[in-house]
Image 1: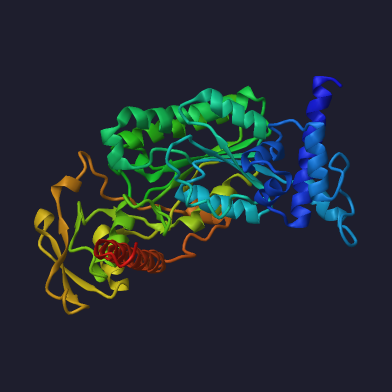
Image 2: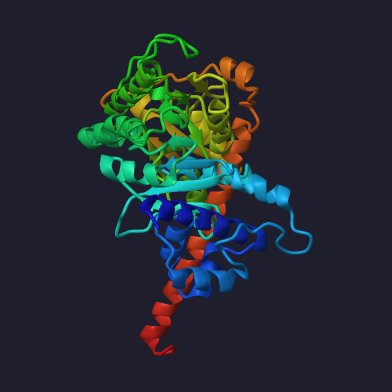
Length: 456
């Protein structure tokens, strides 16, 4: 058998195994247990990265109750060949930044659409996969190791997966961190985009693979027009924004130079209960929950007057997908068209936690004082301002105009209101903090019991 024939056979068998798993409702983890292999090895079989030995074919055929070297048509009672054909033509998507807020929601969305979803993760001694833990083990969800700073690893994954769609969500996305680590930010957020585009070309997929680039409202920076749309001039105002601007323009260049279907979604601030805890919105909702439950005294913030257009991340991933379903590649602003200040976000979050704030003072002297709520908090300063949280150059007025997305994509940017978004986040964090408090009590009691010799 020639090398090409072996490759075709492996691809054919891998597809059959995936179809059988789907038909039987068996997870990747369950299959691994049945054949006595690790999940990682089974994943390599399912994605075609590992060949199938005679022993492997025999074990898998027994575990699945079918000869995996023959097409599984008519499985079970009355087998559904229409289903088999549909599954055989399943679209394949590759997501960088799959472990992040947007990556986890997009993975769920695409799996519901019937996609085969592949995600890129970085090798690390610490596991940061809690946002996608519930997806691992599903037959059509696979993870691959690669790094946005390593072009060869990206080429290898793209060549293995051969995706129909690539969603490049990976980035160093914290504006303040970009001032502390500008070189790393540029390498990942700017050159990383180029590496993805070149990898698609290197694998000869430039005419079949569609690419979505996660851009940002920070491109507008020191704003020259309010609200901002696709024609508003850019004025980046941080190392993060400057790096993202390169990503935006290199996507546009490859679209025009190589006729590639690649687009940028200029996303305004989008939050959720899965947002990282160092981002201001999550910092606020967690503080509101901790203060309400007696675990924190005060929340310290920077500029309370900064204005943002906040939306729900779960709604925004639908728009990412819609952008790649169009007949021609275009860039879109993804926003709600509604603007609020950091101060308003604080007020709403504390209100959801049962606390009413009243703000007084200006600049560094501004304070949020409790005027209603738990008796022990009334009259206390719960929100204060520190110059430590001011940025060297601060963007103060971001407000998106989603008119084009609403008209061309038929997307509803206001599916989740600002008030509903804040309530979702606070409700999640109230439960999280309550759980942490209960766990702390257990640990404290156990330490006391051990010390007194009650528990040995």
